Length: 242
Picture 1 (spheres, rainbow, N blue to C red):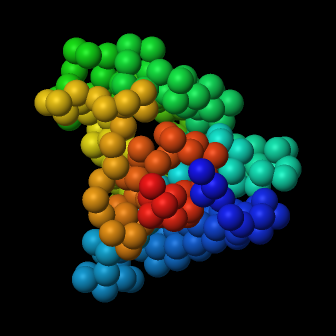
Picture 2: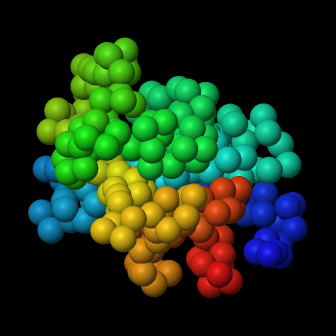
């Protein structure tokens, strides 16, 4: 089944453009919000700004995720990995290589005891599973590093604590919830009828627009597991061709 009618060259160019757009928008938006601060923004804009920054923060991880599959820029593995490494550092000082190894374990053993993203069969409840998920991926030195960055921004660059909490810390936390909900919990939780195939995943029924808004089409998760080298922006096309 051919679901990739475009050439690798065109796909690579579009992948670079998509990655560049997400990274640039994240930087520009964060700079604007931290420069102006809550006191200089209209009150009605605060919540949309937090949600917008959360969406862009999630985009950093989605870009890194595609890089783990080699699909940001397929023609140049070094550039592809460099983009992924840069995005996970911006996201939360993650190790790209470690995440890549763990993610391929997830694809090899989805929703099983060997799956690092799974709840190991003992914590099917949402919050327990989410806590287990964070505990597995967030380490001590990572927290120390993020705290150091926070202090540099506060004391070295004069950014107000409230602005950092609202426009940097809160969006990063909400982003983990967004990724966990649409990329792990909803797709991989076992239904009463059990799993239907070896992918142990299912997709949501959102239309293309809401699928993009919810989590960059990450909710089309069965398609992702069936075609793991397809970048996020081509998943709706794959879904239509099923």
